[in-house]
Image (cartoon, helix red, strand yellow):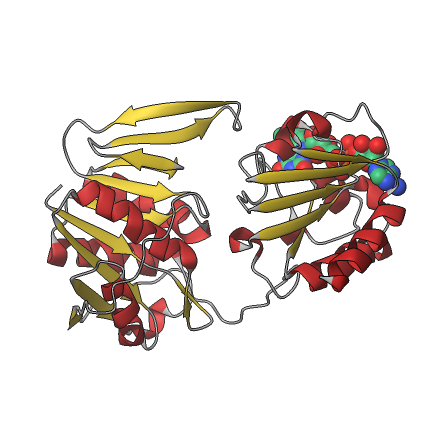
Length: 317
Ligand code: FAD
């Protein structure tokens, strides 16, 4: 590829890790070609230095009020104009709520290809992506044309930053009009201090936690480990927690270094959201629970006894 554009994401003023992972993926795709980045929203230029250190030679910044919060039509209009300006051969985004929404919209509009939810890639380029809810992996080879790639967070290693690199910053004047949606207020339902989709450690509770209060031992351990707390759909359906915490086929997909499943049976739909985690620990009182088939470490026991013991031990470290 001669030129690869990475559309980055900023949340609460911070570049998301997945954007740096997307730049690492762009290095593989570009094979020595040019990498450029786009930043939408307020104070976009403040991220240029970090993006340069991770390989972007040009950073297009669009400080536009309509782009501070994501809306599909504003972002789609902005991305189309950015692509017209930068003229890339490939566009890389995170496989996040934003990337999953805007990439197919713009790919369809421009008649480009799309390979979504990529977990690894190599020169060629050849892309690997999970299918059948993570039961199998598919290889997709690039043939010709222009393509969008969305990469699954926490799968592609961020490259080592090169402090000597700088980028040309190009402010872009976008025309965004006829918006059908505007964001009036953002009411965020979070599972804790750590962003679930980018957390290095995730502790999840299932129906086995038995109540909303039953999540407290998970939060106690999360506090000690700097982890995010997630849930199975069973726990969400039972109203023990908010659906924003749901992990699985119809929830969030996470790939942390450590996933601790507490009182979760291990239904295929749950595994679809966490089976790529690097190390899986399952705590379940049923030794026959299917979760043990995917777990690297299993603890057969009552989560209300096991979790306080783990929390006490980790506090000593
Ligand atoms: P259960 O299956 O009831 O398991 C509870 C477990 O807790 C049991 O294994 C039990 O042994 C254990 N337990 C009980 N008490 C204790 C204790 N004190 N200590 C330790 N262990 C204990 N599910 C998802 O999670 N995510 C999805 O995205 C999702 N999408 C779906 C989409 C579709 C179309 C469908 C049909 C289903 C979907 N589901 C999803 C639901 C899924 O099939 C399961 O029903 C759900 O994952 C079960 O949740 P669970 O493991 O918490 O509950």
